[in-house]
Length: 355
Length: 77
Image (cartoon, rainbow over all chains, first blue to last red; front, side):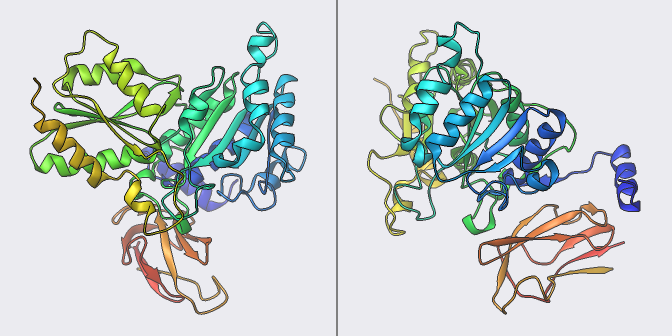
């Protein structure tokens, strides 16, 4: 590490912190590298993670850096290798395991729900499960109903799991480092629409400055992505960007929107949601998971259950309708939430006359 | 002034690629060896490193098509 380039870099970053933009994919890769360097008990296993570096480019370079004992390719047998990860976590390792698409949860839910989520409770706190389940979520690129779901609520509903999803690269790195160090099982969802893989398309805004040095973003705390006074949008992952897009449009119409980035749905930071709606009096939850029994309903209930919030309009939500996600490029875009549809719903909310 | 060029051997055939991401903004300082862009061709992303240190002038925006041999940015030292 003594090449002239390295020395020059170190010098310039010592004087003024340089902006260094990363995609979420690269930020996650850096987080894993750094945690594996810091802690020999961190291991990685899953399909195509070692030699290929992950189909989501999250584990490139790990095999060369840490060897085949700590970075393992597995067969296509999610129930086997995710179950193995729960066992590894029980005996003191910190496994990071990838479920390539969250849609595939059906073949391994017993390991997640009956084993990982309940380990600590069933053992009276004697056995922990410090495991990270990384998984990709989201559609919008015509991959069909078995590769395009979000399923936030499916996981958020189960006690014992932490469920988080970043909307930008800075949070992605800091949250993954926190997740790896967490003693509870963390379902770490990354949305394909902000991930930063060229062939999928991405939201450029999601690639942010990411410091190389150590930092952590706490799990379970929402962020105010944008401050406003007239209406609160609550979103997560990609829909945070839909909310920012809508807020930008509405600003030109003289409306000031606040955008809450949940970052975590379990635990859910109800205090931050309530504080925002207490200020604005108007709420729209936006969520690309199916509508019924979902995150959007939980967000709205959290506000309605607080007697101290005076609402100026009925809370509303924009979600994916309760049908399987179509493959057809003619149908899918018309069903997914986007900034334009969100702005239109906001105009309805803003013009509502309460009786 | 140093050109940032898509190398002629970055992929095999003469198909077009596209700029997946710029990791710096127009006008940013870059150091030689910094990862400045990702170029995608046929679902494969390739890294482009800064050939020199200086101020980056971006000539082709992200998500635009590019060809091998094309100059996509300049670095003023």
